[in-house]
Length: 170
Image (cartoon, rainbow, N blue to C red; front, side, top):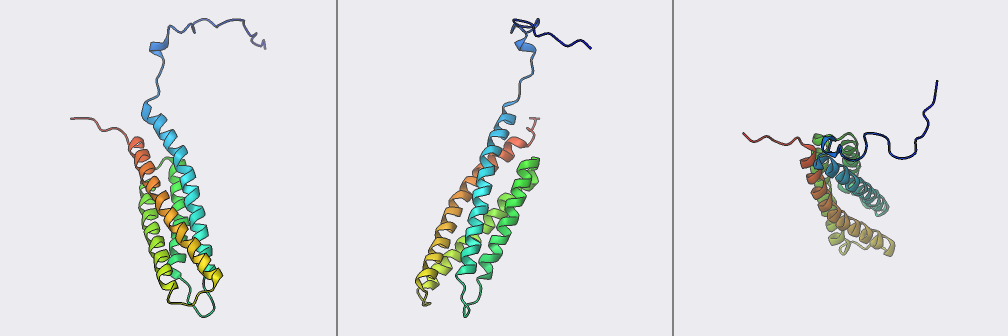
């Protein structure tokens, strides 16, 4: 078989005059790519916040205290919602992205509620210095998670609207 020889200069037919016949990528597809690139780090940050939250919930329980089961359940549900979000982002599934947004919002509201409740009841309990610092870290993570959740809602809403097929006017 004879191999092609590289020709010097431009091949025939590509002088630029055929630009009007070339396919143009619709702008919503480029927006989808950009929004996916913005959503993936947010999902990762949320998963890290859930990990810190569940570790703080485990470490702040002492032998006489009961475990903060609501915070642990919220963090576990947060991990599941992060997996759903990553799967929806990777496979471009609108329904999974909507489920991720709803589930992660509920989880974040629960996490903030648990953190605020923990901070309010900390004054009633005699907490050691380490426990108080861990509860403060959990509280800060919950507040940071709420801010990240706002960005997640905006980015996911934009992504879903660009992934959905355009509606035709009647």
